[in-house]
Amino acid sequence: MITSFNIFVPVLMGSGASLRTGLKVRELGCRKVLVVYDKGIEAAGIAGTIVENIQNAGLETVCFDGVLPDPPDTMVEQAAEMARREQIDGIVAVGGGSSMDTAKAINVLMNNEPPIMRYFGVQKNLKPGVPMVFIPTTAGTGSEVTHMCVISCTSLGKKDSVVSPVCLGSLAILDPDLTLGLPPKMTAATGVDALAHAVESMTGGQANPLSDALAREAIRLIAKWLPIAYRDGSNLEARENMLLASMFAGMAFTNALVHLGHSIAHTLGASFHLPHGVACGVALPEVIEYAAKTEYKKVRMICECLGAEVEENASPEEIGAVARDALRALIKSVDIPNLQQLGIPLEDVLGVAPMVVADTGFALVPYRITAAKVAEMLRSAYSA
Image 1 (cartoon, helix red, strand yellow):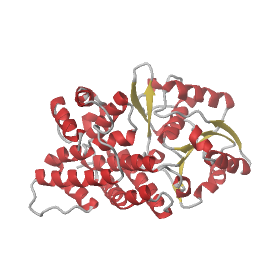
Image 2: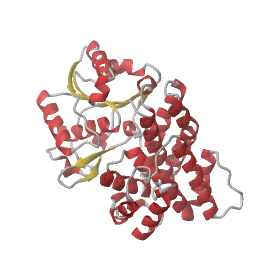
Image 3: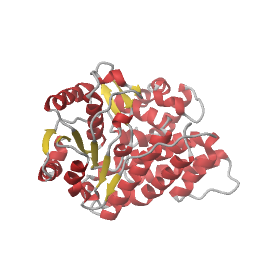
Image 4: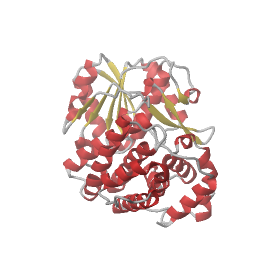
């Protein structure tokens, strides 16, 4: 089999690494940088510290503090207009996936005409933007090492992605100190997002040896450290290992992409306004059980990474059942609610099945299934 691997972003990692932001941005040749973050990062004092650090390196800063969850196209276009007007020559994004997605979309529009929706899909010929530095404060999206951004199209009422080298950062700075204040619910949701990236990238249509290796290590780390980080948010070792796991999972799905689990998550998120990590977790065990029919060797590996024993002569169905139960136990250990607990009527949940099979990520499923089968999986997950 002929396959290709993506080259990743350089990474600076460790406690206090964010205190080198200004120095690293200056090394990239920047003189005037746009710092992108949301109101929560500002209130936590993280944004101010990073801005001051950049300024102490002799650089000028322009701040955009209006990042919104599931970044809308109208917001990123306004931010890009400001960036062009200010003639910035670098971008620093601080925060979760929304901050990094916003920064990437701004970069796309630095030298390419808006609107951003013109560039949804895979883009190989965009004009380059400016150097970008990503500083994640959550351990989930892995966006600091991916070459894509997810944007909400307000006119169409759905999310879509820009996939381009213009979305790739020049440097990722992983400082576990910045994640110590992350609340338990956010820790759980972002951790399950990373888990979904890893297990789906292993079982989809573009998996390869590199993505498999990265995904396996991500799953091992998440299984060990997510419950600890959830129970004790001040555990620096747990926080550091979760950042590492999130990055590995991001690298894995950059190479292999995700499939049915994220098609379900995108649809549930858009329909019922669920946090992305929660939406990823509610049906992930059923998705991997389904994948075991053809990807039983990979699913057996997932079981091993989760510490779940599988009989040597187990059938694909038995392997799938073990994986389902192990994933469900891990997800429940960090109190991710099921769809029934979220208060969504069962008939409404089942009604989104046709939208799931219409999602772009559905093209990468291990084998084709009908909307009726998706509905059956959602019914199984509903109160599990």
